[in-house]
Length: 296
Image 1 (tube, rainbow, N blue to C red):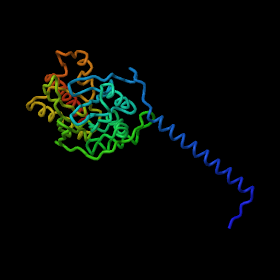
Image 2: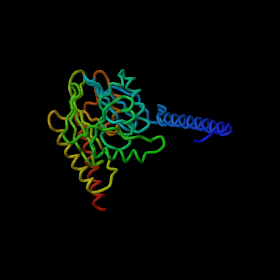
Image 3: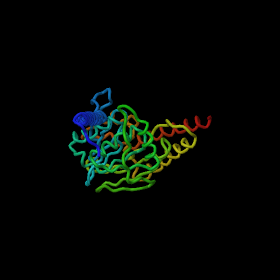
């Protein structure tokens, strides 16, 4: 048995008090750290903020100046396509509210590929609003690698993915039907998708090429990129032809320029020829990239 003297008891109480103060300090610091990690950046031109806008009866742009993010409305909730970089994708829930919708109604987040500017805010939106994230399994591994190496304000966690998308998979959300294609090249698991949008009640076939750039290395990926572009070309020319280009980066489809010309009489986002011209650009990129990789 250990007997405590008055001096020992006072010392023990002092130690306990110091421990409690230290614990409270650590807890407060952790809470402060969590707040810091989830701050929402200023909606400024410098940060690339763009006011959200409607493109079709059931499609809205909620991305930023550099990267596209699309909101699709269905009879059974909302679908978000790509989530922007962290922390800039934290604007998306507010933008959804600006458009008159509730971010709690986001049922799915489709991720085209595992680069941070497309997947970086998916976990944040998923955690706050409970959406299911869908992407290819190989690019989920890329997303985890990218997240592990993220730092500073761009720090992010990979989302939880319960369902991985395979080539030619299909998904219906309410009355809206989506079809997915694995189109490797930009990354090994790049996902492209198509669905129909409506303008004044009339349907148009829309397509998102999940990866546009040739900022990768290796002849193998260059070959895959060229094959994917040709496959998308063939798909787009099957009837009904693709008439709506929803590029994963807005400048590739002149999203903002077209929006400036939008009117009740004319929807400039409907343009079959421009989608083929867009594929011409990707084809030229593939030829150049193949030649460069062959030299190596």
